[in-house]
Image 1 (tube, rainbow, N blue to C red):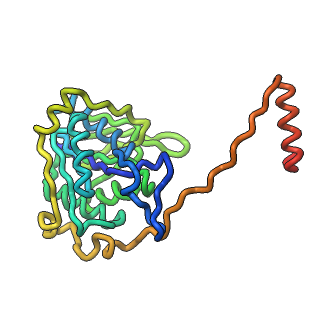
Image 2 (cartoon, helix red, strand yellow):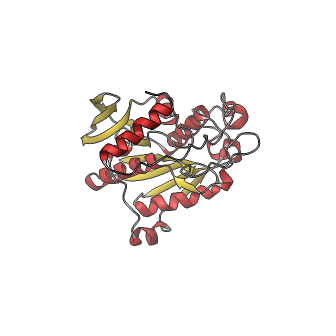
Image 3 (spheres, rainbow, N blue to C red):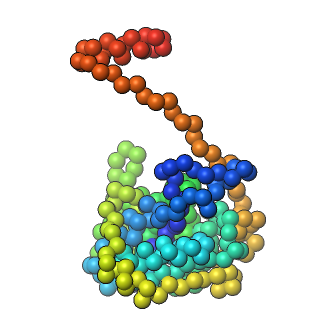
Length: 266
């Protein structure tokens, strides 16, 4: 059994977002991290591996420097890593990215007992589209927003988060499941894992390796082939500094009422 975990290296958007003059995100000027939701997917894979005879394969599309991220995932416990990297893939939108990753997984081989795990969405795009699109292109059933995954044979019972509650879905492998942070707490790398990471296989698949994959339409990948593009990226306006009230509960209530009255709220 193989568990493919789709991961992405993203810019750390917790600070100031660097933006180019044309409105696009300047990723070179921002520190890179592993997409948080993808770490939950990796943790879910490692927990399944502890219970089953499974091989965990981290799969990512990105520039060569994303290889550092792949080594971190190997240090966490992944058995193999596959980096899809090539200039021809650069600038791909979700439609193009999903067909490239789907083509790579098809190239690697997916069997009846296999599973694909993805994070819910990436923090640099927040579209939550790539995972479901990979499933569609591979003609696999999918369950999104998983908060619990239970495996019995080739059947997974998934607790799926909704806006107003939860639903339980059963799905047979091979399938794709997207994970959210409520699913688990990702583990840290271990010293032993760090030292063993360099001994584990890290494969790079370039354009030449994947161009003949039937799931990849070469005219609809990359920046020029993508059907959508980012019009503009920008930092949201900075909110004004809050005002603190001091005193007793009654005094603070009076101060608050006066401020609301000044702004004609009450």
